[in-house]
Amino acid sequence: MRKLALIGAGGHGKVLANIAKKMGYEKIIFFDDCKSEKEGYPYPIVGRICEAETCDCEVAVAIGDAKMRQKLLEELEQKAIKIPTLIHPNAIIAEDVEIGKGAVIMAGVVLQPGCKIGKGCIINTCASVDHDSKVGDYVHVAVGVHLAGNVKVEARTWIGAGATISDHVCICSDCIIGAGAVVVKDITEMGTFIGVPARRKTF
Image 1 (cartoon, helix red, strand yellow):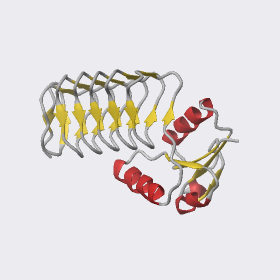
Image 2 (cartoon, rainbow, N blue to C red; image 1 turned 90 degrees about the horizontal axis):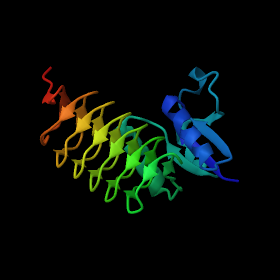
Image 3 (tube, rainbow, N blue to C red; image 1 turned 90 degrees about the vertical axis):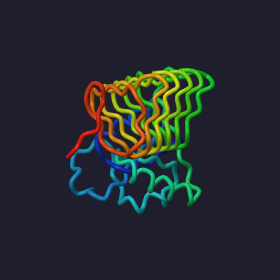
Image 4 (tube, rainbow, N blue to C red; image 1 turned 45 degrees about the vertical axis):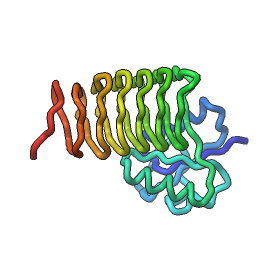
C-alpha cells in the first residue's frame, strides 16, 4: 500500500491529496498543529507537525509559505525520510525536464523542454514554464502564471496569479510578483513588484 503523510491541513493540502490519489496513493493522512480548528476536514489529521517524521510513510509538505516549506523539507531530508515529488497526471511535461525533490506540479501545468524546477517548488494550476527556464528552490508559481523562454527565477520568490514573465528575464530570490503583473526586465533587488509593466511597490 502506498501511504502519504501531508504536513499542513489547509486548502493547498487538499489539492496535494487529490494529486496523490491520482498517482496511486491509497492511504493519505495529515499532520497539523491546529488540529482542533480543522473540524470537518476531509482527511484524517492524526497529529502535530513534529510527529510526522514518526509515521511509516512518505512525507510531503503542503504549506505555501516558502521559508516554512524550506525549513520542514530540509529537516525531513536530514532525517532520511522519503519525500515524494507530486505530479498531476494531466500536467504536460517534456521528457528532459528536471524536477526537484518535494516539488508539486498541478493540473494543467505545461513544462517545456530544457526546464529545471527546483526542490520544494509549487507550480500551480494551469501555469506554464517555457523552454530552458530555471525555477529555483521553493519558488511558488501561482495559478495561470506564464514564464516565457529562458527565464530564471531564484529561490523562494512568489509569482502571483496570472502574472507573465517575458523571455530572458531574471528575477532574484525572495521577491513577490503581484497578481497580473507583467515583468519585462530583470529584477535584481528583493521587493514587491506590481503592475504592467511591473514596478517596485514602495510602502
